Length: 140
Image (tube, rainbow, N blue to C red; front, top):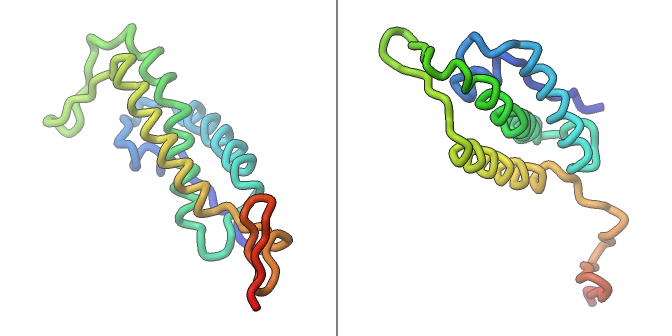
């Protein structure tokens, strides 16, 4: 049985360069949302063998697509308190258009990864035949 591939809040933080102040509980909830969304979209609950990396990336981008609006919504009240990372990089909050564009890009990547990790239905393919919607072709 394939091993369950998942991500942690720390991995989400590292992937998106999120500050440590982003609550772990918030990221965990959005990872759970991503796990349900990926299982629903792919039709399987675990990564197909050999596609664990794509599965993990799909979880990551889906969790980020889910959490980005939350991060930028509750944070805007404190936007004047911009933090610094190691004294040189400033964090800033995204405006609504930037959030929308970021979520759209993440969801696009999620859909690409879902297409890769969705197993083909072996019932639709038989030796020497390929289906094309309601028609079928057979090899002679």
